[in-house]
Length: 440
Image (cartoon, rainbow, N blue to C red; front, side, top):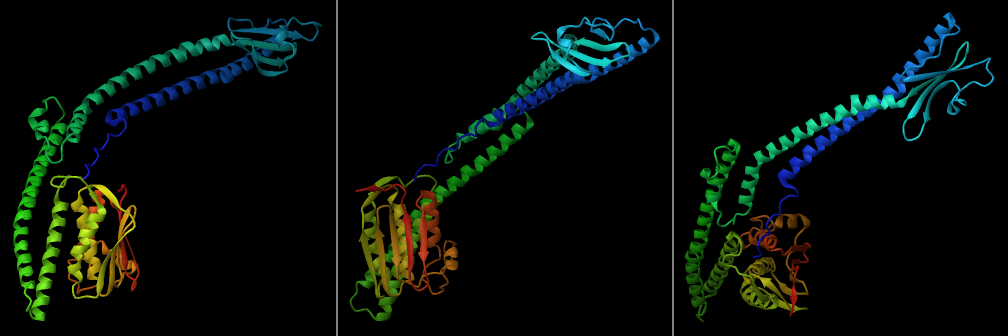
Protein backbone atom coordinates (compact mmCIF):
# COMPACT_ATOMS: atom_id res chain seq x y z
CA UNK A 1 0.00 0.00 0.00
CA UNK A 2 1.22 3.44 -0.76
CA UNK A 3 2.10 5.49 2.30
CA UNK A 4 -0.29 8.34 2.97
CA UNK A 5 1.28 11.78 2.50
CA UNK A 6 2.08 13.69 5.65
CA UNK A 7 -0.33 16.62 5.90
CA UNK A 8 1.33 19.94 5.40
CA UNK A 9 1.00 22.73 7.88
CA UNK A 10 -1.45 25.42 7.02
CA UNK A 11 0.28 28.46 5.57
CA UNK A 12 1.44 30.74 8.38
CA UNK A 13 0.13 28.54 11.17
CA UNK A 14 -1.15 29.93 14.46
CA UNK A 15 1.73 32.37 14.84
CA UNK A 16 1.10 33.74 11.36
CA UNK A 17 -2.59 34.21 12.11
CA UNK A 18 -1.78 36.06 15.34
CA UNK A 19 0.67 38.31 13.50
CA UNK A 20 -1.86 38.96 10.73
CA UNK A 21 -4.52 39.84 13.31
CA UNK A 22 -2.27 42.29 15.13
CA UNK A 23 -1.07 43.89 11.91
CA UNK A 24 -4.67 44.25 10.74
CA UNK A 25 -5.63 45.91 14.01
CA UNK A 26 -2.66 48.26 13.91
CA UNK A 27 -3.34 49.14 10.29
CA UNK A 28 -7.02 49.82 10.95
CA UNK A 29 -6.28 52.00 14.00
CA UNK A 30 -3.52 53.90 12.19
CA UNK A 31 -5.72 54.56 9.18
CA UNK A 32 -8.62 55.69 11.35
CA UNK A 33 -6.45 58.11 13.35
CA UNK A 34 -4.75 59.48 10.23
CA UNK A 35 -8.11 60.10 8.57
CA UNK A 36 -9.32 61.78 11.75
CA UNK A 37 -6.35 64.18 11.82
CA UNK A 38 -6.69 64.94 8.10
CA UNK A 39 -10.40 65.54 8.60
CA UNK A 40 -9.67 67.90 11.49
CA UNK A 41 -7.13 69.76 9.33
CA UNK A 42 -9.68 70.14 6.51
CA UNK A 43 -12.35 71.35 8.96
CA UNK A 44 -9.90 73.81 10.50
CA UNK A 45 -8.93 75.21 7.11
CA UNK A 46 -12.24 75.27 5.25
CA UNK A 47 -14.74 75.74 8.06
CA UNK A 48 -13.25 77.37 11.11
CA UNK A 49 -10.87 79.72 9.29
CA UNK A 50 -13.56 80.65 6.77
CA UNK A 51 -16.01 81.37 9.59
CA UNK A 52 -13.39 83.50 11.38
CA UNK A 53 -12.73 85.54 8.23
CA UNK A 54 -16.46 86.12 7.67
CA UNK A 55 -16.93 87.33 11.26
CA UNK A 56 -13.81 89.52 11.00
CA UNK A 57 -15.28 91.18 7.85
CA UNK A 58 -18.59 91.79 9.64
CA UNK A 59 -16.78 93.30 12.61
CA UNK A 60 -14.81 95.59 10.29
CA UNK A 61 -18.06 96.81 8.74
CA UNK A 62 -19.31 97.71 12.20
CA UNK A 63 -16.12 99.63 12.89
CA UNK A 64 -16.43 101.53 9.62
CA UNK A 65 -19.95 102.56 10.60
CA UNK A 66 -18.55 104.13 13.76
CA UNK A 67 -15.28 105.40 12.31
CA UNK A 68 -14.89 105.80 8.52
CA UNK A 69 -11.12 106.04 9.01
CA UNK A 70 -10.84 102.71 10.86
CA UNK A 71 -7.70 100.81 9.76
CA UNK A 72 -8.03 97.45 8.01
CA UNK A 73 -7.16 94.35 10.10
CA UNK A 74 -3.46 93.56 10.17
CA UNK A 75 -2.36 90.94 12.72
CA UNK A 76 0.18 88.09 12.93
CA UNK A 77 -2.01 85.47 11.22
CA UNK A 78 -4.10 87.68 8.98
CA UNK A 79 -3.63 90.76 6.78
CA UNK A 80 -6.32 92.97 5.28
CA UNK A 81 -6.55 95.10 2.14
CA UNK A 82 -9.23 97.68 1.35
CA UNK A 83 -9.80 98.70 -2.23
CA UNK A 84 -11.64 102.04 -1.77
CA UNK A 85 -14.08 103.16 -4.42
CA UNK A 86 -12.53 106.63 -4.60
CA UNK A 87 -9.04 105.35 -5.34
CA UNK A 88 -8.34 104.73 -9.03
CA UNK A 89 -5.46 102.25 -8.54
CA UNK A 90 -5.77 100.51 -5.19
CA UNK A 91 -2.57 98.97 -3.82
CA UNK A 92 -3.37 95.26 -3.98
CA UNK A 93 -1.14 92.23 -4.56
CA UNK A 94 -1.47 90.99 -8.11
CA UNK A 95 -2.98 87.61 -7.10
CA UNK A 96 -5.89 89.39 -5.33
CA UNK A 97 -7.02 91.88 -7.98
CA UNK A 98 -9.21 89.50 -10.01
CA UNK A 99 -10.96 87.88 -7.05
CA UNK A 100 -14.65 88.44 -6.59
CA UNK A 101 -16.65 88.31 -3.34
CA UNK A 102 -16.49 84.98 -1.51
CA UNK A 103 -13.97 82.52 -0.05
CA UNK A 104 -10.88 81.55 -2.07
CA UNK A 105 -7.83 79.30 -1.67
CA UNK A 106 -4.89 80.79 -3.57
CA UNK A 107 -1.96 78.55 -4.50
CA UNK A 108 1.20 80.37 -3.47
CA UNK A 109 3.70 77.66 -4.54
CA UNK A 110 5.52 75.05 -2.52
CA UNK A 111 5.42 76.95 0.76
CA UNK A 112 1.70 77.22 1.45
CA UNK A 113 -1.62 78.57 0.21
CA UNK A 114 -3.40 81.77 1.12
CA UNK A 115 -6.97 81.63 2.44
CA UNK A 116 -8.76 84.73 1.17
CA UNK A 117 -12.19 86.14 2.01
CA UNK A 118 -13.48 88.98 -0.22
CA UNK A 119 -16.50 91.10 0.73
CA UNK A 120 -17.95 94.50 -0.18
CA UNK A 121 -18.20 97.22 2.47
CA UNK A 122 -19.43 100.81 2.54
CA UNK A 123 -15.83 102.05 1.99
CA UNK A 124 -14.91 99.60 -0.77
CA UNK A 125 -13.94 95.95 -1.31
CA UNK A 126 -12.27 94.22 1.66
CA UNK A 127 -9.69 91.44 1.20
CA UNK A 128 -8.81 89.39 4.27
CA UNK A 129 -5.83 87.04 3.72
CA UNK A 130 -5.00 84.24 6.20
CA UNK A 131 -1.62 82.55 5.88
CA UNK A 132 -2.18 78.78 5.68
CA UNK A 133 1.24 78.21 7.23
CA UNK A 134 -0.39 78.89 10.54
CA UNK A 135 -3.05 76.26 9.87
CA UNK A 136 -0.39 73.74 8.91
CA UNK A 137 1.61 74.60 12.01
CA UNK A 138 -1.44 74.08 14.22
CA UNK A 139 -2.22 70.81 12.50
CA UNK A 140 1.38 69.66 12.97
CA UNK A 141 1.74 70.45 16.67
CA UNK A 142 -1.79 69.68 17.76
CA UNK A 143 -2.59 66.90 15.29
CA UNK A 144 0.24 64.99 13.69
CA UNK A 145 2.71 65.11 16.59
CA UNK A 146 0.15 63.69 19.07
CA UNK A 147 -0.83 61.18 16.36
CA UNK A 148 2.78 59.96 16.07
CA UNK A 149 3.08 59.68 19.84
CA UNK A 150 -0.21 57.78 20.17
CA UNK A 151 0.64 55.46 17.27
CA UNK A 152 4.05 54.79 18.82
CA UNK A 153 2.35 53.81 22.07
CA UNK A 154 -0.17 51.61 20.19
CA UNK A 155 2.60 49.93 18.19
CA UNK A 156 4.62 49.24 21.32
CA UNK A 157 1.66 47.82 23.22
CA UNK A 158 0.60 45.74 20.22
CA UNK A 159 4.11 44.36 19.79
CA UNK A 160 4.28 43.44 23.48
CA UNK A 161 0.82 41.84 23.22
CA UNK A 162 1.90 39.87 20.17
CA UNK A 163 5.06 38.67 21.90
CA UNK A 164 3.03 37.62 24.92
CA UNK A 165 0.43 35.82 22.80
CA UNK A 166 3.15 34.14 20.77
CA UNK A 167 4.80 32.93 23.96
CA UNK A 168 1.47 31.62 25.23
CA UNK A 169 0.68 29.60 22.07
CA UNK A 170 4.22 28.34 21.53
CA UNK A 171 3.70 25.25 23.75
CA UNK A 172 0.55 24.37 21.80
CA UNK A 173 2.39 24.73 18.49
CA UNK A 174 5.27 22.65 19.82
CA UNK A 175 2.77 20.03 20.99
CA UNK A 176 1.10 19.99 17.57
CA UNK A 177 4.50 19.54 15.87
CA UNK A 178 5.28 16.58 18.12
CA UNK A 179 1.97 14.90 17.35
CA UNK A 180 2.34 15.57 13.61
CA UNK A 181 5.71 13.80 13.59
CA UNK A 182 4.24 10.69 15.18
CA UNK A 183 4.33 7.40 13.36
CA UNK A 184 0.66 6.24 13.58
CA UNK A 185 1.83 2.68 14.20
CA UNK A 186 4.34 3.61 16.92
CA UNK A 187 3.51 7.02 18.46
CA UNK A 188 6.31 8.43 20.60
CA UNK A 189 4.33 9.06 23.76
CA UNK A 190 7.38 10.06 25.80
CA UNK A 191 7.49 13.41 23.98
CA UNK A 192 4.14 14.47 25.46
CA UNK A 193 4.36 12.77 28.83
CA UNK A 194 2.87 15.09 31.51
CA UNK A 195 6.28 15.52 33.18
CA UNK A 196 7.91 16.87 29.98
CA UNK A 197 6.21 20.28 30.28
CA UNK A 198 7.41 22.92 32.72
CA UNK A 199 5.22 24.21 35.54
CA UNK A 200 5.17 27.77 34.19
CA UNK A 201 3.32 26.72 31.05
CA UNK A 202 -0.42 27.19 30.85
CA UNK A 203 -2.78 24.78 32.56
CA UNK A 204 -4.60 24.21 29.25
CA UNK A 205 -1.36 22.98 27.66
CA UNK A 206 -0.90 20.43 30.44
CA UNK A 207 -4.51 19.30 30.03
CA UNK A 208 -4.14 18.97 26.25
CA UNK A 209 -0.84 17.08 26.55
CA UNK A 210 -2.33 14.71 29.13
CA UNK A 211 -5.40 14.06 26.94
CA UNK A 212 -3.21 13.39 23.88
CA UNK A 213 -0.96 11.10 25.91
CA UNK A 214 -3.95 9.07 27.09
CA UNK A 215 -5.34 8.98 23.54
CA UNK A 216 -1.99 7.85 22.15
CA UNK A 217 -1.78 5.14 24.79
CA UNK A 218 -5.23 3.83 23.86
CA UNK A 219 -4.37 3.97 20.14
CA UNK A 220 -1.13 2.07 20.75
CA UNK A 221 -2.95 -0.64 22.69
CA UNK A 222 -5.65 -0.83 20.02
CA UNK A 223 -3.03 -1.22 17.30
CA UNK A 224 -1.36 -3.96 19.31
CA UNK A 225 -4.69 -5.79 19.70
CA UNK A 226 -5.35 -5.38 15.97
CA UNK A 227 -1.91 -6.75 15.13
CA UNK A 228 -2.45 -9.73 17.42
CA UNK A 229 -5.88 -10.38 15.93
CA UNK A 230 -4.54 -10.19 12.38
CA UNK A 231 -1.76 -12.61 13.22
CA UNK A 232 -4.01 -15.04 15.08
CA UNK A 233 -6.83 -14.87 12.55
CA UNK A 234 -4.41 -15.49 9.71
CA UNK A 235 -3.37 -18.75 11.35
CA UNK A 236 -6.36 -19.95 13.35
CA UNK A 237 -9.00 -19.32 10.67
CA UNK A 238 -7.07 -20.54 7.67
CA UNK A 239 -6.08 -23.86 9.21
CA UNK A 240 -9.64 -25.27 9.53
CA UNK A 241 -10.54 -23.82 6.12
CA UNK A 242 -7.63 -25.69 4.59
CA UNK A 243 -8.88 -28.89 6.23
CA UNK A 244 -12.41 -28.29 4.87
CA UNK A 245 -11.11 -27.65 1.34
CA UNK A 246 -8.92 -30.77 1.39
CA UNK A 247 -11.80 -32.85 2.66
CA UNK A 248 -14.10 -31.48 -0.04
CA UNK A 249 -11.47 -32.15 -2.73
CA UNK A 250 -11.03 -35.70 -1.42
CA UNK A 251 -14.75 -36.35 -1.58
CA UNK A 252 -14.99 -34.89 -5.07
CA UNK A 253 -12.16 -37.16 -6.21
CA UNK A 254 -14.41 -40.18 -5.73
CA UNK A 255 -15.89 -41.30 -9.00
CA UNK A 256 -18.93 -43.10 -7.58
CA UNK A 257 -20.73 -40.29 -5.81
CA UNK A 258 -24.44 -39.86 -5.74
CA UNK A 259 -25.64 -36.63 -7.35
CA UNK A 260 -26.84 -35.24 -4.03
CA UNK A 261 -23.46 -35.87 -2.36
CA UNK A 262 -21.58 -34.46 -5.36
CA UNK A 263 -23.65 -31.29 -5.32
CA UNK A 264 -23.22 -30.88 -1.57
CA UNK A 265 -19.44 -31.37 -1.77
CA UNK A 266 -19.21 -28.78 -4.53
CA UNK A 267 -21.18 -26.29 -2.45
CA UNK A 268 -18.92 -26.98 0.54
CA UNK A 269 -15.83 -26.31 -1.59
CA UNK A 270 -17.30 -23.09 -3.04
CA UNK A 271 -18.37 -21.86 0.40
CA UNK A 272 -14.92 -22.62 1.82
CA UNK A 273 -13.22 -20.66 -0.94
CA UNK A 274 -15.70 -17.78 -0.48
CA UNK A 275 -14.97 -17.66 3.25
CA UNK A 276 -11.23 -17.81 2.54
CA UNK A 277 -11.50 -14.85 0.15
CA UNK A 278 -13.65 -12.95 2.65
CA UNK A 279 -11.14 -13.51 5.46
CA UNK A 280 -8.31 -12.41 3.18
CA UNK A 281 -10.24 -9.24 2.35
CA UNK A 282 -10.87 -8.45 6.01
CA UNK A 283 -7.23 -9.02 6.90
CA UNK A 284 -6.12 -6.64 4.16
CA UNK A 285 -8.54 -3.97 5.32
CA UNK A 286 -7.49 -4.47 8.93
CA UNK A 287 -3.82 -3.84 8.18
CA UNK A 288 -2.55 -0.31 8.68
CA UNK A 289 -0.05 0.90 6.03
CA UNK A 290 1.85 -1.74 4.09
CA UNK A 291 2.71 -4.24 6.85
CA UNK A 292 2.62 -7.67 5.26
CA UNK A 293 1.60 -6.27 1.87
CA UNK A 294 4.73 -4.98 0.14
CA UNK A 295 4.47 -3.25 -3.21
CA UNK A 296 5.68 -5.34 -6.12
CA UNK A 297 5.73 -5.25 -9.90
CA UNK A 298 3.15 -7.67 -11.29
CA UNK A 299 1.45 -8.16 -14.63
CA UNK A 300 -2.29 -7.62 -14.30
CA UNK A 301 -3.02 -10.09 -17.10
CA UNK A 302 -1.41 -12.90 -15.10
CA UNK A 303 -3.60 -12.16 -12.09
CA UNK A 304 -6.67 -12.02 -14.35
CA UNK A 305 -5.82 -15.45 -15.79
CA UNK A 306 -5.36 -17.02 -12.36
CA UNK A 307 -8.61 -15.57 -11.01
CA UNK A 308 -10.54 -16.63 -14.12
CA UNK A 309 -9.32 -20.20 -13.62
CA UNK A 310 -10.36 -20.16 -9.96
CA UNK A 311 -13.78 -18.77 -10.90
CA UNK A 312 -14.54 -21.86 -12.97
CA UNK A 313 -15.73 -23.70 -9.86
CA UNK A 314 -18.23 -20.89 -9.16
CA UNK A 315 -20.20 -21.76 -12.30
CA UNK A 316 -20.01 -25.56 -11.97
CA UNK A 317 -23.35 -27.01 -13.01
CA UNK A 318 -24.50 -23.81 -14.75
CA UNK A 319 -24.40 -23.04 -18.49
CA UNK A 320 -22.04 -20.13 -17.92
CA UNK A 321 -18.69 -19.63 -19.69
CA UNK A 322 -15.76 -17.76 -18.11
CA UNK A 323 -13.86 -15.85 -20.80
CA UNK A 324 -10.81 -13.55 -20.81
CA UNK A 325 -10.31 -10.88 -23.51
CA UNK A 326 -6.88 -9.21 -23.49
CA UNK A 327 -6.88 -5.99 -25.52
CA UNK A 328 -3.69 -4.86 -23.79
CA UNK A 329 -1.06 -5.98 -21.28
CA UNK A 330 0.07 -3.77 -18.43
CA UNK A 331 1.76 -4.03 -15.05
CA UNK A 332 1.29 -2.29 -11.71
CA UNK A 333 3.58 -1.50 -8.82
CA UNK A 334 1.33 -2.29 -5.88
CA UNK A 335 0.32 -5.19 -3.62
CA UNK A 336 -0.80 -7.86 -6.07
CA UNK A 337 -2.96 -9.57 -3.45
CA UNK A 338 -5.13 -6.47 -3.14
CA UNK A 339 -5.89 -6.41 -6.85
CA UNK A 340 -6.56 -10.16 -6.72
CA UNK A 341 -9.04 -9.77 -3.85
CA UNK A 342 -10.91 -6.98 -5.66
CA UNK A 343 -11.14 -9.03 -8.85
CA UNK A 344 -12.18 -12.14 -6.90
CA UNK A 345 -15.09 -10.32 -5.29
CA UNK A 346 -16.27 -8.87 -8.60
CA UNK A 347 -16.06 -12.29 -10.26
CA UNK A 348 -17.91 -13.98 -7.43
CA UNK A 349 -20.71 -11.45 -7.69
CA UNK A 350 -20.89 -11.82 -11.49
CA UNK A 351 -20.97 -15.64 -11.30
CA UNK A 352 -23.53 -15.61 -8.51
CA UNK A 353 -26.02 -13.46 -10.44
CA UNK A 354 -25.47 -15.08 -13.85
CA UNK A 355 -27.49 -18.25 -14.44
CA UNK A 356 -26.65 -18.64 -18.12
CA UNK A 357 -24.52 -16.96 -20.72
CA UNK A 358 -21.02 -15.75 -19.92
CA UNK A 359 -18.80 -13.82 -17.54
CA UNK A 360 -16.10 -11.98 -19.47
CA UNK A 361 -12.99 -10.32 -18.07
CA UNK A 362 -11.70 -7.61 -20.43
CA UNK A 363 -8.22 -6.15 -19.98
CA UNK A 364 -7.81 -2.75 -21.64
CA UNK A 365 -4.97 -0.23 -21.59
CA UNK A 366 -5.83 1.26 -18.18
CA UNK A 367 -8.71 -0.78 -16.82
CA UNK A 368 -10.05 -4.24 -16.13
CA UNK A 369 -13.77 -4.91 -16.71
CA UNK A 370 -15.93 -7.79 -15.50
CA UNK A 371 -18.97 -8.14 -17.78
CA UNK A 372 -21.76 -10.63 -17.11
CA UNK A 373 -25.04 -11.54 -18.79
CA UNK A 374 -26.94 -11.84 -15.53
CA UNK A 375 -30.12 -10.27 -14.27
CA UNK A 376 -28.69 -6.74 -14.13
CA UNK A 377 -29.58 -3.99 -11.70
CA UNK A 378 -31.77 -0.91 -11.72
CA UNK A 379 -30.32 2.50 -10.75
CA UNK A 380 -31.94 2.15 -7.31
CA UNK A 381 -30.28 -1.22 -6.73
CA UNK A 382 -26.91 0.12 -7.95
CA UNK A 383 -27.17 2.96 -5.43
CA UNK A 384 -27.53 0.38 -2.62
CA UNK A 385 -25.05 -2.12 -4.06
CA UNK A 386 -22.05 -0.62 -2.27
CA UNK A 387 -23.72 -0.97 1.13
CA UNK A 388 -22.84 -3.86 3.40
CA UNK A 389 -25.07 -6.97 3.35
CA UNK A 390 -26.96 -5.82 0.27
CA UNK A 391 -27.61 -8.73 -2.14
CA UNK A 392 -29.14 -6.86 -5.05
CA UNK A 393 -32.67 -7.81 -4.06
CA UNK A 394 -31.97 -11.57 -4.07
CA UNK A 395 -32.46 -13.59 -0.90
CA UNK A 396 -31.38 -16.88 -2.51
CA UNK A 397 -27.84 -15.71 -3.18
CA UNK A 398 -24.97 -17.73 -1.72
CA UNK A 399 -22.98 -14.57 -1.06
CA UNK A 400 -22.63 -12.59 2.14
CA UNK A 401 -23.58 -9.20 0.71
CA UNK A 402 -20.09 -7.85 1.48
CA UNK A 403 -18.26 -8.26 -1.84
CA UNK A 404 -18.91 -4.83 -3.33
CA UNK A 405 -18.44 -3.15 0.05
CA UNK A 406 -14.99 -4.71 0.30
CA UNK A 407 -14.21 -3.69 -3.29
CA UNK A 408 -15.26 -0.10 -2.61
CA UNK A 409 -13.13 0.16 0.55
CA UNK A 410 -10.09 -1.32 -1.17
CA UNK A 411 -10.54 0.94 -4.21
CA UNK A 412 -10.69 4.04 -2.01
CA UNK A 413 -7.69 2.93 0.01
CA UNK A 414 -5.44 2.07 -2.93
CA UNK A 415 -6.66 4.68 -5.43
CA UNK A 416 -8.25 2.35 -7.99
CA UNK A 417 -11.75 3.73 -8.76
CA UNK A 418 -14.48 1.17 -9.43
CA UNK A 419 -17.63 1.91 -11.47
CA UNK A 420 -20.79 -0.10 -12.05
CA UNK A 421 -22.86 0.07 -15.21
CA UNK A 422 -25.96 -2.11 -15.32
CA UNK A 423 -29.42 -2.47 -16.79
CA UNK A 424 -32.15 -4.88 -15.66
CA UNK A 425 -32.20 -7.99 -17.84
CA UNK A 426 -29.04 -7.08 -19.76
CA UNK A 427 -26.25 -7.78 -17.29
CA UNK A 428 -23.70 -5.72 -15.41
CA UNK A 429 -20.30 -4.21 -16.18
CA UNK A 430 -17.90 -3.55 -13.27
CA UNK A 431 -14.77 -1.54 -14.16
CA UNK A 432 -11.57 -1.20 -12.11
CA UNK A 433 -9.84 1.98 -13.31
CA UNK A 434 -6.03 2.01 -12.98
CA UNK A 435 -4.53 5.54 -12.82
CA UNK A 436 -0.86 4.59 -13.45
CA UNK A 437 -0.52 1.49 -15.66
CA UNK A 438 2.84 0.37 -17.07
CA UNK A 439 2.53 -1.25 -20.52
CA UNK A 440 4.44 -4.50 -20.97
